[in-house]
Length: 236
Image (cartoon, rainbow, N blue to C red; front, top):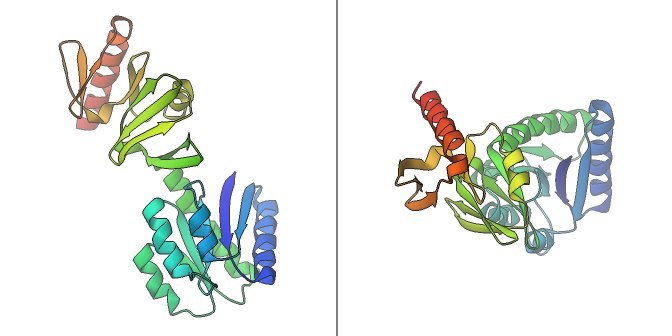
């Protein structure tokens, strides 16, 4: 399911974009979930980093699309942004917020489908590099290589990451399955470790970014084997 936010104050333009997405979905067999925002201010106030793509009108009341994109980038550096505008000159400004593309109004289906297809290629690449996890009030996208380790603490998971610690309502088993094949291993039943960030093993503990994580007796063999395989794969 591809999640798309459309920020557009013109009801007719929104209806057209929504129809184009539905047509593209029927042609390609893709499923889309669309959320509509009437203006940039509403988008920013309600925004959660759970979208794959944002179609953002530039000229809107209360807050223009360029300003809104700046605020969104602070919350979500990964989401793909495409501007929808009457003026091509806004495309240059779009580089300042790392926008992928722009679509000129009036929008025609052929041009739209070409740009949507290109955007979805970027979405697929980013999906492999990020993990979306459930948090209180919504969801957050985390860069996988920036996750140091995941700790089970009561009924919550604590993601220790480059950007800080994030509490999640997910289960450790769910996260372990989502990260399968991406260089993570359990050192005990309560910790899932990113092997890339293991600095060494000392006194029965995995040293991860200055933290000492106990390696349980039952997990020792499999953890050390996974770590050896990972180091060997990286060095080769």
